[in-house]
Image (cartoon, rainbow, N blue to C red; front, top):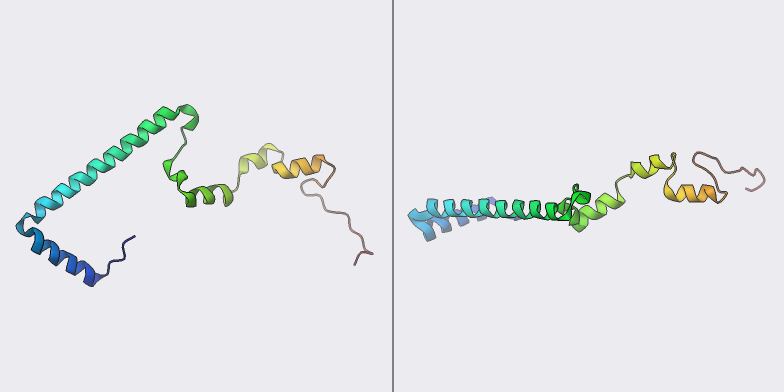
Length: 115
């Protein structure tokens, strides 16, 4: 997230000591309390959102709204429920087999003259 090296970090610490002096522990404590309050507010907002959406969205996770997570979840993960509910066929495979195509595990016909 932040690309700060060791030398840059040392400069930031020296600047903080120069600017805040002996009040640095108080400022750090206030920053910690403020961060804790932000976390509590975020958790409270998340709980209110999940409560307001109702029981059908009980598995809703706000992180799923991140575009990278959304793509990873819907494109790169297998959907085992759809596969199992169609007797081993995916939805597209089932409609293809119903139309007279090959079923799951069937081999296509072999033509020895077609080379």
